[in-house]
Image 1 (cartoon, helix red, strand yellow):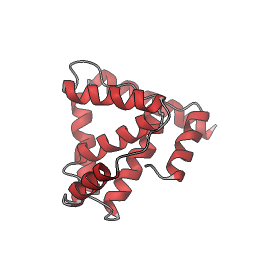
Image 2 (cartoon, rainbow, N blue to C red):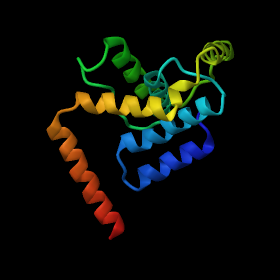
Image 3 (cartoon, rainbow, N blue to C red):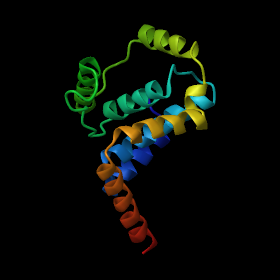
Length: 150
C-alpha cells in the first residue's frame, strides 16, 4: 500500500495537469526510498521501477500499459491487470501473499537504488531512444523550464 504522502503528491500532480508518467514517478521515488532505508531490496533497478509503476497503476494513475512488442507479453498483461485493478475499488489483500513477497524482497540487495545504478539505468534507457525523441524531450523540458521561470 503506498504511503499517504505519495498518494497526495500524485493527486496534486494530476490536478496540476501533469503527465501520468510524472504522477507515477512519485510511486517509483517511494520505492527507491524504501530500498534505500532498508525496508526491502530489489534484484535490479528495473525491478524497483516496475514495482513503483505497478503501485501507481493500482492507485488509479492512468498510465497506459506498454505497447505490444516493447516488453514481454507477460509484463504487458500484468500492466493491463494493474490498470483495471486501479479502476475498481480495492479488495482486501492476501496477508499470506503480502508476507511472502515482502520476505522475498528482503532477501534481495539494496544497490538497485544506488545513485550509480539509477544513473546506469537512465543511460541505458536513453540509448534505446532515437536522437529525435531525445531532442524533442530536451526541447519540451526547456519550454517547461522557461514557463516555470516565467
